[in-house]
Length: 298
Image (tube, rainbow, N blue to C red; front, side, top):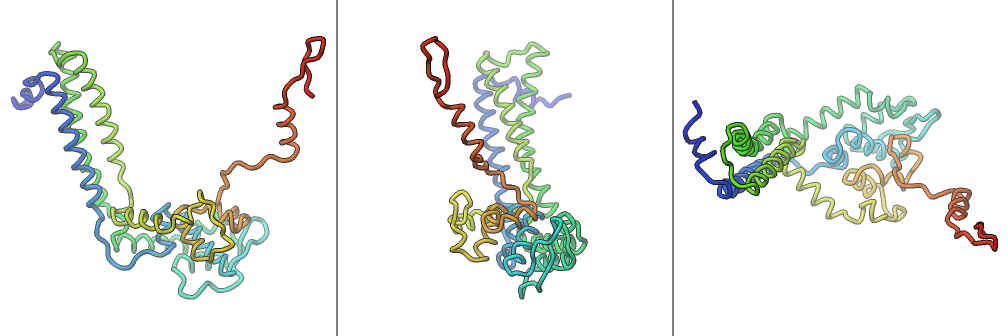
């Protein structure tokens, strides 16, 4: 038998009051879910991550490898080779990050970018990088991710109560309130389920890492590709920082051939060729009327 308290919650309250209490319960459950998300991974140990680690926090392994390759390229330790490959031509910079050294070791002979990403040494360096970020608290452990996901459970529980009231009102002909209350509850359940589903998607980064990225992007807002910074006035550190915080697109402005080699896609619209521009101009030219009533382009 169903507990009497649940029957009281479902049917001991009239429609408008039930809807009001439903909204209050959703707000409380949402506050719990957001609090769990913001408090998990709040503490860290060790120093702040470098560009390679920041790149991993921003967009995971591929961006971290692109930053590593760009560091080698800017140090003149790597150059493009034949058949869309790259090859090391000098030693890596001193005190380089382990992933940078692993990428350098992978291109001692000419390699494509796909081969670099699949290289066992590069993958071992990536695993050590991830282990370090987990140890220092920048990435969430499996247990922490499970706790964040469980924080959304109260939202689903509240939605289940509302759905049960709607279903029983339809099957058992019980009055769930006026049409406005029923429609409001139906919309409320749908929104609650959507918010719960969104919050159940757990980020890999902890709260401290997300704060770090927001703070770093504010501090280096001038490097945002949308502001079109002039890279001729900036050094390697600025380029690597921009890539780590905003993605690999800044490399297109500095070294487009190498950027294409390491998988950076230029999604900006290309300017039309002179032939395309002339054709578009002819198409947009106004038609002139002839004395016979026919129109022609000037």
